[in-house]
Length: 215
Image (tube, rainbow, N blue to C red; front, side, top):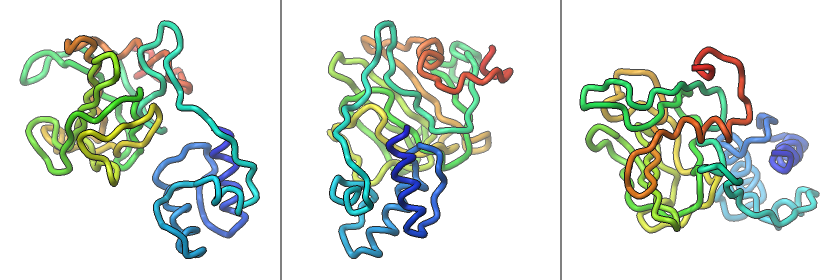
């Protein structure tokens, strides 16, 4: 959003290359890390209040996004350059598809769609999901992010995460290793698979009229 864009512009004034897109993705995190190394402070990629003030940015406290009335998700799970369709229930080798596949380039940041706790994850390929994260929110709803290329540093089982926090990157691990890079997202209220597509559409800010999104 605009706060991230302000940060990116301030980084560019410091002669640090970063794309000005308003998305706190891997590129912005690495740019912050370069600045932290230059200033010889802790290198964690987090734009703290003190770092923002040193950049001349008037920092303000913000709260994590939360779902609006009628929405199951607070944010869209993929940063940019994505496409998807309503493929829930489509035939798969192991049965009907239990989620939505969101196609995006490898390494694209993946966001937590809601706040909650990490139930379990793996940084090495295991089973059909490859590298994956299982998340649970306060209501007991489960979210499954599969075929990841990587999991965010420091994330582990029991970690608390906020809606919009980067938890990993898009990949093609598991049974997707010979296919296109994508995020497989499952939404499980009461532990039962439910079609995430209508909820994704509600938080998709781009809503481009691409064939994939019209389906």
